[in-house]
Length: 217
Length: 217
DNA sequence: GCGCAATTTGTACAACTGTACAAATTGCGC
DNA sequence: GCGCAATTTGTACAGTTGTACAAATTGCGC
Image (cartoon, rainbow over all chains, first blue to last red; front, side, top):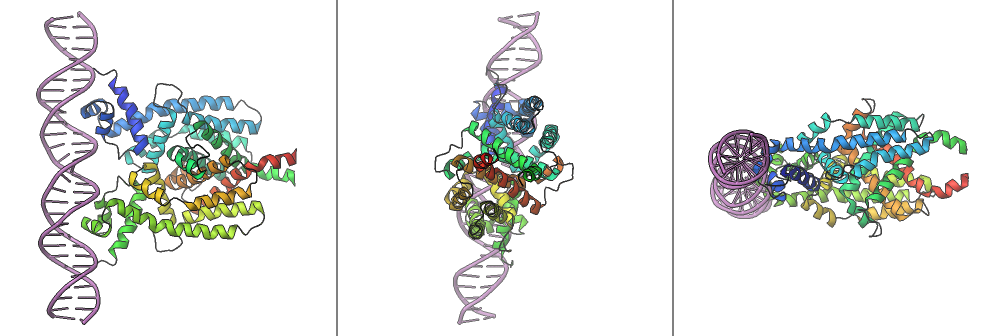
């Protein structure tokens, strides 16, 4: 009857989860948004947790693939500063922009990840732990090579802040608009990407500043 | 009977909300953690939303007061770079460290704020909008004065990233530990504060870099 | 267009939710 | 230690939750 109900259910699940979190969204909400019955969800996915797992994997795998692809390109840049910038873009852009135009969109899924990680939901945590992010380690290594002599702690913490900035930009964009008195549009995602990249570029670059500062002295 | 049940309820509410979010924690959970009955919550607070409001105001007011106090001290520093560093500390430290040792602790409350803002709960949003943060505007102004010529958009976005970094450091500290292979302790809050301050210091300072870079050229 | 498998619906279930309120208990001024 | 107000308990209520499953419907190979 439905033209691929299963896909619609998955899409609406991302949208609703990203908007209100995992707990606040009921299976009936998702069904209603898809114009379907509750039973269709248990039929297709078995349980709410398994639905989440499917949503998660559906987006995580292509996003990380895209990240690694862009990372590979970035690593061909010889100038350390330009490479650093490219690596950061390779990490951030796929989180904001969907590659295969079919799925719910990178930003929406990333927002969902942000909300889930905040909620600390056991189902979600198990899924995240399963899928844990060998990609992040590859990026960490690439970043380290751009800032020789930087302590590991500084690199790791800045990676954490990068992800936190990413998440919060998507979770609460209106704060940007309000704080600027309406001058800056927090929902401008292209601007957000550029700002995140520039800001974290400066923070990573400063880790190698001891040598650069001594050049100035 | 109880030695100030009301206080215990408020304390446990912060703890549970910060751990699992607003939706996932039932009034019965809070009551049970306090060794009390559900009815005591409706008696003392009337409703779940009003309980949250009380929790929120109880911590927000002293935290912002402390921030403004430290901001005042920072503003007496004449050197722009040193002042910038002090302003950032003035914003971050009260979010991690509780001032009046009675309440649940700055970090626990900040973690709760992070989770609530991610959940996008209507109750919480209304409360946050009410209490909105004239303090943040004062900080923005102070930061702007440290980086003359910096565009407003850059300042606002970096303020956003600062808060996002803060939140995510508290929401998911284990990621730091894992990503570093156990070398770096994500739960070391003193280290977290220092890293956040240093990283955002570099990101804000780079906004004025055009003039400084032209000095180098 | 028959027949069977895949899908969708409808409904039932026990568990849990926030809230309301009567009854029991407590603490304290006197 | 009486009496009254403040507090705490217990219970009831209607609504919602995830899950299970029989019945109805659909799609499709033949």
